[in-house]
Length: 422
Ligand SMILES: *Cc1c(COP(=O)(O)O)cnc(C)c1O
Image 1: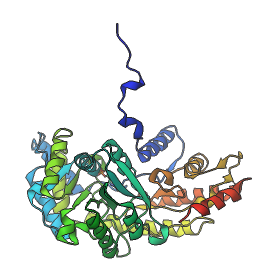
Image 2: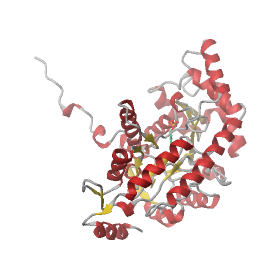
Image 3: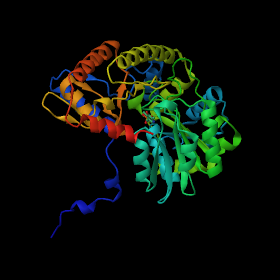
Image 4: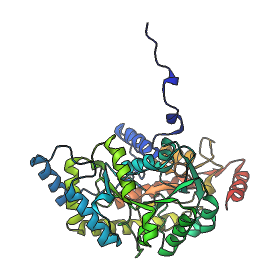
């Protein structure tokens, strides 16, 4: 006699994790689009540019040359060397071949790092608003994410006193993301020094996600925290990838650099998991890192123009405040003044999720509620789309917000929000 496995058949860990909300919203907007609904998508977490020609060609050539076999888990040596050279040239960091890990995207690399470092009872310090996968990857390793808030007034950079109070004996790592998704926060050298000092005091790791290092604005200079001193370098794992800089999101290529023993363990985890990043894409990675960088300039110049436009438009809207991002391709406008307002049907919009739902339904604009990133007073708008789409999307948002009216509990909502602010 056979018995059906019930829900108890699933592991405890899946109960703590949720599917990536950004991927879910992108999928929902795609579904509406396929049904013929005219959606303006401002939810995407990827550049709208094509993978540069020379990178495409290198991948096709690798395919034709039969480079379709397994590679070493740590990547083909030519890629490892290209990464070492990149880290030296761009970041002033010196690593040997045994200090580089290559994976199927930065997300995969971060996952393997979490598996190599975190145990049950470990605490992982994450600054909110955060990239969606950090807490879930910590959960999946059995660890406890400790979420600390950053303030818009501090440019969404963590305040050293807040960080110092949040670390302790159980802290295994601090995750840093500069330039940051979703806020566009950019840590200066001094900001990084403060974080490094606290990590030093507490004796924890620093996981530095630098995937947006090339996408920066108004002269913001990206500094890798690992470059501050040999002591800081020895407790830091630098994570980077080609998805954002070289418009290669679907191709899956990311890497990490850090102390040899840590990288050996990360490689070991991956040897039991993906084995290696896609072989032909690794050759595309060599071309991207060693080839002409003008594709980057073109893309960043376009992003800069769009950012200026979007920030200007949002700040001109009643009840919306928008921080000027230092990097990445998102804005994170504060929209909490609309909480407690009602739509035409009398439905009260109680939080960012309700507001994003309202904008999808009424304005036919898809964007991501701030709650997904641990910042419920905000929405995330991606400007990795054409100027025409941005203009249309912002027109629709402005029009839809303008139609909202304060509901019966509006004042309570606003008082409550004021009390929660710090
Ligand atoms: C997109 C993104 C990643 C993951 O990038 P992949 O290399 O495509 O896996 C990691 N961190 C942040 C902050 C991101 O926005």
